[in-house]
Image (tube, rainbow, N blue to C red; front, side, top):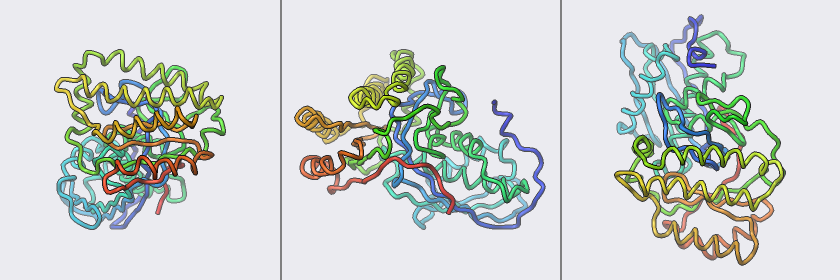
Length: 358
């Protein structure tokens, strides 16, 4: 498979106007991707849990037009959000060769998140995957394939060109993105379903997201990725991530929770270590992030719980634990951790199974 695979032939149908709506989830990486090359290609493979409750709902309203320019408006929660439009413009320019109908329509993109955007929960992942699904769904209609399923591979490919991790938000429950020698079918171009056996321990896994900081990050993920180009530890980091993914394969099969915890927390801290040691350096964790991490470690040592944490590129903490421990972990979170969240807020989530059409 290469990029040419996703260039369409001529469309056989015309549509004057219409509307399509999709809901796509966020995801939380267990093995992180940080550093890219070319057109949104990852420097190392990654694997993520697809989430269920953290999602973006996007409606694409389209109407035929005559001009030869991209024409669109973006609305967030019913309000025009012009600040998002340069990113969508760049996205349309990048995917035009794969979706050549984009200049034939005026689009109104209406979107809403079930969680705060730009704060370290993968809002770009869910947002771009939802939009990609709407666009690929429209292409399906233009191609005269109305009764067929949406091409999820193309949706993942298109989503990646908007936000790298968005290619992991099309399907679930475990998604791999990036070429990996031990995972057949893995690709830098798309996210693929994890192909191996997964132990019952990792089914219905829980993720309580502690909202330490709901504000926009002071350094975007795009800037952070770019800083990996000259990073003195970049090559070792890419090697470490691929090795950690290799180690996860037998762990996911055997259900070894203690070994799972070591890799997941090591990956979270390695990601933030790259930020701390880039030039310019930056810190996305907050004091309350560290307080939560230390309390999780203390609780785990005291109770032999299988609770652990991971972080995306932000201050918020994803508290991961098996479904069997939900009651005890929920009590611990309420008694000890919720005080470190902004306005005492958290999101109860769990592993989900991908996007759905509305």
